[in-house]
Length: 223
Image (spheres, rainbow, N blue to C red):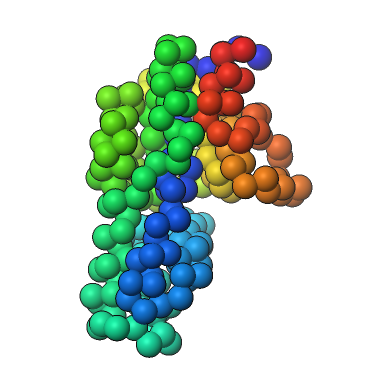
């Protein structure tokens, strides 16, 4: 298999560690388990809209889903303030511990790096900047540039066009199998980051690479 030239990273949960969001929910008097439910629900709504060719921003959906989830909870402030507190948590998330070393190894190998997020580009810019990694990424791309969420093939096509690269010469990196399936339909190679020891869904084509973190991916791509 030929070596790719561009590595495309999903951002939320792939590069960023969402664990601290649980504290944002407990801060307002809500149970911590609402954090992963909230994130999964935002993804569900965004993908459902994409299936119909419709669009809303991550921030819009995040607020609406947050209000819905907190409606039945005895929170310690009004709903809008509570949702604001949760959403602000996205601006201070850390990257996963394996990310800096993996990014350095990929860059040292001469690979071009870009991000492609269902969230706003500004959030990814902040994440990478805080981690000291912004200069390692050539482009910070968002579905807001396209007007539809991943896994629409249009989004991956936008990344390929922006990079001036054939999709077959790109690798999409994500923790979400549905994201990788969309990329595969757009003719990209795929890399599943499996930090939790999960099982890849049997109803989807297997990813090109399965690794436990970015350093392992760098080794696989440069072997």
